[in-house]
Length: 109
Image (tube, rainbow, N blue to C red; front, side, top):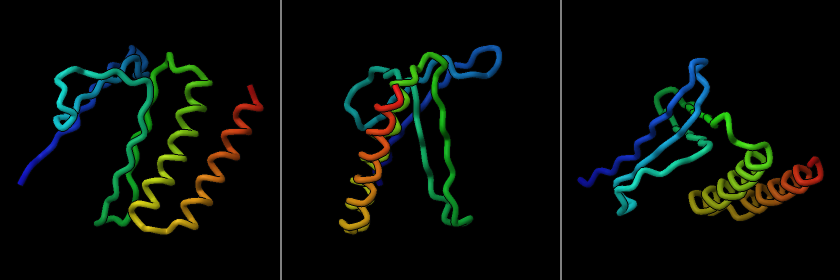
């Protein structure tokens, strides 16, 4: 069986606030360490029937970047949901919600 690894390294300041997020993945074909300003990881715990989450962002992530990050996350979750369930109706409702939220975020600049 083939195995792949995704590794995250989070550098924290003296108050345990993320200063830097770096990641690598074995299947990218690159050895280079990539930087990120934020990450949202959701894992399904089948035993507990619950979602586990890790939400981190660096202290230098700007508000506009965070808004864009959330907008794109909602849209890509819609795409993933459609691929996983073939439920086009709910996926489109999720996209519409994401677009509505994105427009409201832009209005609040």
